[in-house]
Amino acid sequence: MSTEPLKDADGKPLDPAAQAVVNKVRRMSMLSAIATVLGISVVVVLVGLRIYRSADAPPAQSDIVATLPKGAKVMSTAVTANRVVVTVDIGGVVELRTFDASTLQPVGRLRFVEER
Image (tube, rainbow, N blue to C red; front, top):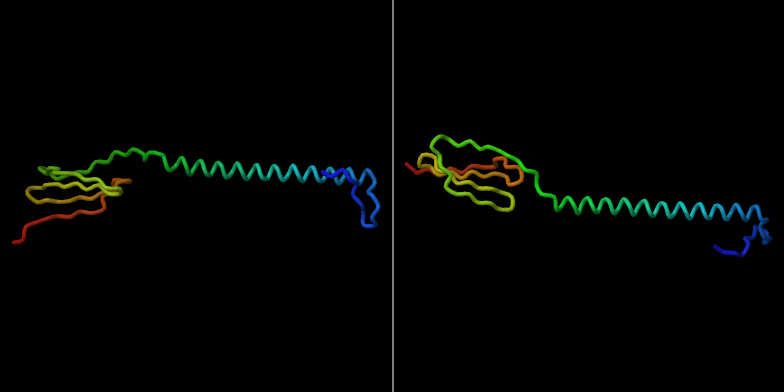
């Protein structure tokens, strides 16, 4: 803060009461600016932490039962980034069942049969 007294529009120094009011307003506005910067910093840090932690969070565990016809055998399985493929032998007919890896919901089925 400046120690030089302020001057009014005529160039005369302000009286001590007016100078005290100006100094008080300056202090209050400085505290308000510091509080605003601190508040914005806290919000930015919290948002950053939530984004950072959500990327590392393990997926929720889910137990899903897929029903196969009687006599069916699982021949193989394969997992990619977003799909799970299960090869099933159902009475001599080979079938590929595809599931979404994150939700384990069925997304497709491919059946191989012989031509007649």
